[in-house]
Image (cartoon, rainbow, N blue to C red; front, side, top):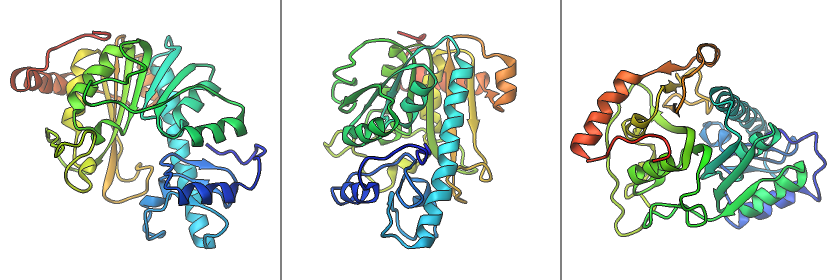
Length: 305
């Protein structure tokens, strides 16, 4: 989100420096000023050299320039995702954003007049953006619990639409998590994950060495998880996905693309599919559904079950 038109309380560069020193990481793009920028867009650009997530007036001009351009581009892409979600499921009014980070998606939904609930552990960062924008939503300062396969304060409460962007790839129980999100959603789901360009989907299971929510191998979260994500889409129609090409990759890298999966309980308007370049993948996902049912004993279910 570009917040340069808002009045920021205090010295935002100093605020971000303090948060960086305390280990707070902002994966989502927020541009407070031409120097105070947070987000993961620049971390994927080799010009920066390190995986920096927060930029302030203490950084060199070339770093600030990269942060500004890359995070603005990533923010525009996130905004497009929310527009796509609303267009795909216009009847949805109540949204749950699991792993919402600071709350970029939920802030966008709130600005669009929707009711949003976000779940993550960046409450202080959320509070800062909320104070600046005057926007607010129900922010639950907790995590998904892989031992109980649910978010404790959410339980089995249902929402019209559930967003789970780049979270299931970090979990030790992705299939349980996807089944859980399916039960919570009445009308639709959105998943996103990074995938290697040109690589075929691979079904992988998680091993945790006794630590919940912690993958074993380094960078494990970036291994292909397209097949695992497609398994849950067996439960809804139409099945929709869009996988970004290298050119369209919002993070500007040569290696990684983004897989976007949308699952709906209703038919997708043809105009929406055309406008957002969405592809229906019923046949392919049915194939994965057969694999899930036969090999992994994952039952076929419908939304809200």
